[in-house]
Image (cartoon, rainbow, N blue to C red; front, top):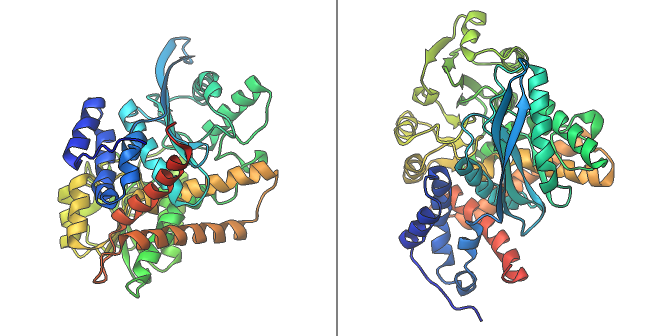
Length: 451
């Protein structure tokens, strides 16, 4: 019989900080979950005795490796690659690969930790993982990106598999990069398996995977508004980012009758008081994806809009907000502005885009606030459906997948209601998501014993 080891939250977090020095993103992610989980675990001796939260906050393994590649000038370049396999209690590790200069072990550990709970919330059998490199694809030729992806997979292939760990795309990794990595995996192993998701439709990919994260975030937002007897018709929306998640979130808001006012990138944001309609969204998709352009160029194409350099869009008055860019882009002061300007609901399309101060402000204001592990789970949900299609050697129709995505987001919302209802009409979606995700993973871990 395991001996119980009750500690309070500050003591637990002190231990996390001590074991993970110089990893602020990871510590922040654990803190955000632990704040809710400690109350839930208070009268559940089995979780304390088996050290469940401590074990989830310690990745199963962190694989770090060198990635050597040759640029077009013939110079040898050296990057660092990682794969963080956080927890596989309910299924194979699942989570994206990110190529960006900001990638560190801390960032990937935070993402893998969050992914563990997000994947649990989908109801699909997927564990949590994340990987990537500090390689910057911007400014690189297509052949340089291909050579890097092949070199990256030459090391990664030995750590992944359809029943072991199934990576997907993330920032800096789209269908092109997935194709290069899958081609190299197939070349090395001589196997055609569902080892990666986000693949092209011609070779095992799934319909609506591209749209899923953005669409799912808006479906979740609509579910939250429905608890107040409202919908998106006539609502103004402020969105950050201008990549895949942001543009598809904007697209779905327009389809549901809302008006999108902003999009952004690392250079600043555009504010279009006329609304960013489908024609304008299509322009942004083409400009950002195929021409690799900047969002500030939007103003030349649509002169009624303005570009604000070096700032985020959270000062623009709105009914709803969707941070869809990157982690810690919405700070405490931004949250105060949104609340003061009458924002009714926030649905995170990115991973941990709101810092802890911002989370606490949204909670204190009791607005509708959905954390990314709940509201942006649509992407990994359809990735899970892609895994199922690969296993069955079949493809489902778009209507079937759209309905499955809606059903999964509704199911996640229901889980949040189950554990987040604070009475008086207030739903703490952060608490609801954290407890629902934790309970599923924790109970599976209890079943397996100390492993």
